Structures are given as C-alpha cells and as structure tokens.
Length: 533
Image (cartoon, rainbow, N blue to C red; front, side, top):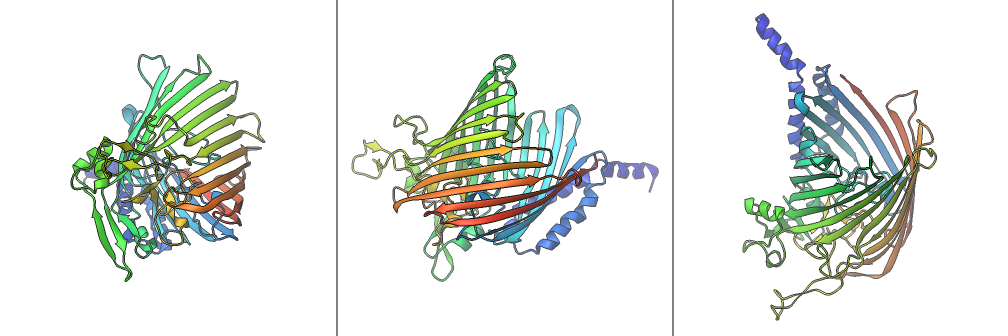
C-alpha cells in the first residue's frame, strides 16, 4: 500500500464515516423490528457494544451512551397509571414488568452551521408489548435551526411546551407511546422572523411515517374484532410567539397541530385464528396529498371517508402565556383538542374540551422549584347529536356531533402498541381485556397537580396526583359514572461520587372503580456517559 493510499484510508476512518454508516444500517432495522422481536436480547445488546469500538475510532467526535434497567411490581390488575404513562411506551400497564435498554448517540458538528446527529437505542423486557424492540434509531441532519430527522426518535409533545416532569400529558400527541418511525423536517426552537426585532418568532414541523404495531394488533385482537396494518402517519404544526422578554416580561404563543392516520388495511380476526381483509385503503401519492391538505376521499375509499376527510384526522389548537418577574416564571397553557373539523373553527360556538394548565417556576426555592395544575375535559365531544345528510333522507340538512375521540371505524384507535398517542388519562386499548383496539372511555373530566424540587445536586423529587371521572363513549356509555384517582411520588439520587449514575425510586397509588385499586413501586437504575470529545 502506497503512502498516499495509506493516508487516505486513515483520513476516512478518522472522519467517522464508517461509524455513521453503521448507525444508518441499524436505522433500517427499525422498519423490520416486528420481524425480529424473538431475537435474543442479550445477543442484541452485545452487538450494540461490539459496535462501540468502531464508533469510537473518531476521537474528535462526541459519543454519549445510556444503559438503563427498570422493574415494576404492584398489587392491582394494572400497574399504577403514573408508573406507566408518558414514558415513551417503555413501561407496561401490567402489574409486574421490567425492561433493559442500551443506547448510543453520535454528534458531529460541521462547517457553516451544519450538524449530524445519530442514535441507536435497543430494548427488551418481560411482560411488555414486545420481547425485544428498537426504541430509537435515527439520523438527523441539521443546518442552523432547520433539521431533517429520519427514523424513530423519542420526542416530547410539540409544538406546545409543557413541564415534561409534571404534566399529565398532551391532548393530540405526546410521549405516552413508542416513537413512530418517520421522516420529519422541523424547526424545533422558536426562530425570530427577520425584521421584527425579535418580537415575532415561529417554529413547526412536517412529518410522514408509518405505524409499526400491525403484528401486535393482530396478536392482541380478539375474535371477530377489527385491527389495522401498514397504517401511515402524518403530522404538521406551526406555532408563533409574540413578545420580547428582554423588553417586556410577557410572551404570547399560539399555533396549531394536526395529525392523520391514512393508508393501510383493515382486517377482522376469525375464530380459527386467521384474519380476513375487510378494507383496503388507498396508499398512493394522492393519499399523501389528502393527509397534507385534509380533503374528502375518492371512490376508492369507504363512503364515510367521502363524507368527511380521508383518514383519521385530528389535532389541537395550542396557546400559552408567559410572564416573567425576576427569576420566577408563570406559564398558562390551553391545549384544545378536535377531531375532523368538529370544534376546529368554533362550529358550535364553544370550546368545551381540552386542557387548561398553569405552571409556576421558582428556581431559587430548591425544595419546591415547580408547581403545576391542569384541568382536562373531553366530556362534551361536540355534543351527543349526530346526523349527516349524506346518510339520511334530507341531503340539505347537516348536523354533526357525537365525536368519538381517539376512536375510528377503519383504524380502530389513535394508539401505538396499545398505548394512547394522546392524553394518558384516557386509558389506551392495552387495558381492554376483550381484545378490542378501541378506547373504552373517551368522555372524561379530570384535575391534575404536580410538584417538584431539587434540594441539592444529588437529589431531586416529584409528586403527581390526578382525579378523573369517566362516562364511556356516546355510542357505548359506561353502566355508571366511574372515578379513578392516580398518584405517584418519586425520588432520584444522582451520586456525585459516581458520575453518570442515577437511581430513581417511585411509589404509585391508584384507587377507583374504573382501572381499579393498585399499589406498587418502580426502581430505575441508569448509567450515562460520553467519550471521544
């Protein structure tokens, strides 16, 4: 080998290109994860760490790793709600469960504002929706504040920011389920609009993806029940911020989030265990267009899609008001949920459903650093009346209502691997014992409080409590109004003598006649670190 060739090879390795391609290779495995769920977990995690030396050949780059193990034990039919909810689908609703995950991230700043980020996160567990799964596998290419993200990645609710440690959740899409693999263009942080002197800024995203829980649905589904496979995903958002806190301690945020399930096929489980296809939804370019600009479906869709819009369209209007005084901050939020066009543009003269929240931050008070209250309602659902002239005798008469939040007659439910994509106080299909992939009660009112503190660098804590009342659905009301109290107290220890280690202990207490009584605990051990910087 000549000296020039030798130098070229050394340059290639030092640039970290092979490490990047290795991560991209595993990115592809996300889309085939359903076919490898029976893979031995220990072998998979070993493979991840065997890849680490290859990734670490670039000393000028930054790598971050995480290894995490958690176990839950409880006494009820289900684990306490707040030991399960808003944890990206990592924990199970079953009373006793556990998981092990290991991941690595790679970050590479480039010239002229460019940046590459990539990550791989593998997990496995017991009493989970899968024995083994790819939790995250992504590659991000960023230029300044614009990012193109490909793959599966954990994201908090967007674009409306809430206190992720204390909030009960987001109405349309939050961190309550496993990530959905997608191609996503986004501006994650507010970007000031030129010429406004920082008084007006915006952020937003556009994404297309695919649900990966088709096999889980088929296994979970009961006899003569419907499920869906190969369902496509679309979401978009735009959020504005008005105000300049350097000049005036008041900011106003307002924007819109929309999402759609489209494409795919519906099946029905047969008594002999086989499945029969019942609906074949179109999945061509026209369907992607109908998802981007919600319009009625064509003749190749069921009649119901020709009445409203093609696919299961939903979303939320988002508002926030921030007030700063000294180091303190008070933030009020409104998260208004809607389905199709019902309550999207004040059609019925009221916005009764949604989530109202107030957050107070006291950074200099170590024992109590944040306090949150939220009130949630989905009980109105545009009212009980539903009449559509397309189906009735009077074609010129149109009355709508009776919205069946999170449920859909083709795609069954706004869920992923049994957990709701929206608000977790509306328990997902995983809680159904009859194998139906639907939300049993989507008409609910609730109050929620959360308090957190950081007494020292080594200790932090949080307490959450919720009280909800459930009425079922308009089509299938519960036999009576049901009540459910859910609570959790969690303490996290971050020893300064063992950098990168943390231990969290949580106690959950649920009482009620909807999900039942449950008392349990959860232990989470985590090790994080980095190298190559």
